[in-house]
Image (cartoon, rainbow, N blue to C red; front, side, top):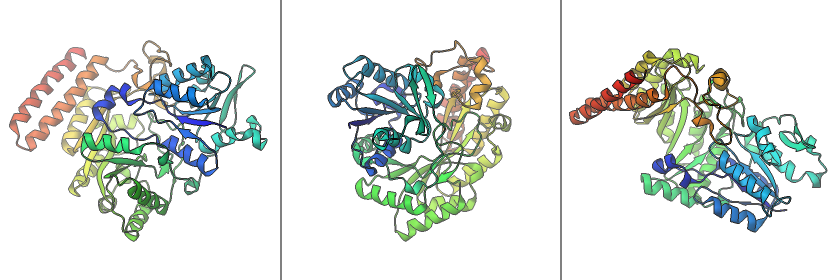
Length: 458
């Protein structure tokens, strides 16, 4: 049995990422690979990040796998559909079974199956994919494989949901040796002066943010033991020796007890690491920030989304914006670089809320921040809220979720100006604090121009 895993993301096609140049390996796919290897299933992984569509197709044509497993998110949707079309219309037609998994498939199951996918894995994929590969040998019927969807006699069959894995320590580590990690390290090193590798310590998120999707790992909180994570960090340091670790967890400081135990494990193993992580302000305190500092956290991203408590409440974020500001300031006092995220254009947001966001960023003064326009991911509460206000009803095949627009308080051009206004106004404030008055006036002028643009397009 020939099994090939891939993901259909090509860095050369991503103009935004080419400017940022912070690529990371497909860790979800590598978890699948690790699980298959532990079960004795021979397979290969074609990492498309630094490759091309043509090279992937040549690999598929050459190998002619019995099963092609593809990780899908909304960014790779169009490429995955092209891959399916090539297989179903080419010489592999009838031989290669296409199996899709990942965050984009749950609410587009029917679409993907109608587009030629043979199977869709819904939710966590390790066990479901393994049972599919071995179902004929084991005698297991397709209808008995939890988390699986497929077409039979022109009708969609969707089995019952698979219960999430509780003991994450039972999973093998991501099979990083299946791909060329060095390409990622070099991309980071040449563009940022340091290298970085991703590590996952938890699955699921119990919070209720209306714009956030939980399609794969659900709304639970499950975590590997600090000992397991430390073991992985030691292996990474030995094999790759990156300058930094990026913990991809939604809320790294979810458990104070876990953080304390993690600190003890690192100390016991005499392991020193530098790392970056994301968390929520309500899961931070001075004690936790101290632990982060002592365990090597150099950059802490604290979710805010807005400086307006009214908008945060509309999002069902369940955090106090004043506490967010306090934690950003406290992290910086401990010498940790503080970052935060801002989301503009959430349903119901108005000009007063945007002004409060500017004031929030000035007061908290994070080292870095990002701004994005809110977009509706299918299956989220936000999507349900704006479903009837989506503009032009775009084709799911052509438009990724991040490009879906809906009727907001203001038009598209207004938010383009608003983003420029926030960046320039906050940067002018930062330069004033540094007494760099040339920089202050430069950004202040740009902020004023952007503000006029907002008023003209309001």
